[in-house]
Amino acid sequence: MLGCRELTETVTDYLEGRMRLWDRLRFQFHLGLCKGCRTYLDQIRTTVKMTGRLPEAPVPPDVENALIERFRDWKRHDPAP
Image 1 (cartoon, rainbow, N blue to C red):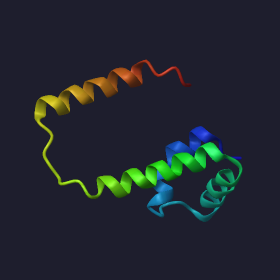
Image 2: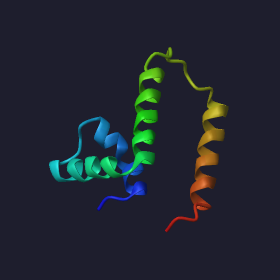
Image 3: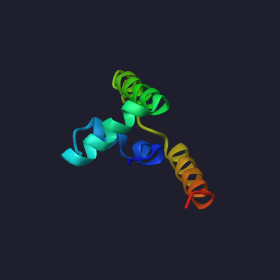
């Protein structure tokens, strides 16, 4: 069975229709059982819908570099296996 963590890691593939049939069925089965993941999926759909309306603006290089460093640092300290 698909777990919550795996669902959150594959939600983009699901929304973009890039999942194989079996994986999509596992994803949907989990959604049927897990209210938290249904809420998460709704939040992601809302985020995609809302951000699609924002004007594109370039990210200043110093901001981009700072974000990349934070994500690298976060990944190094991620307690998950």
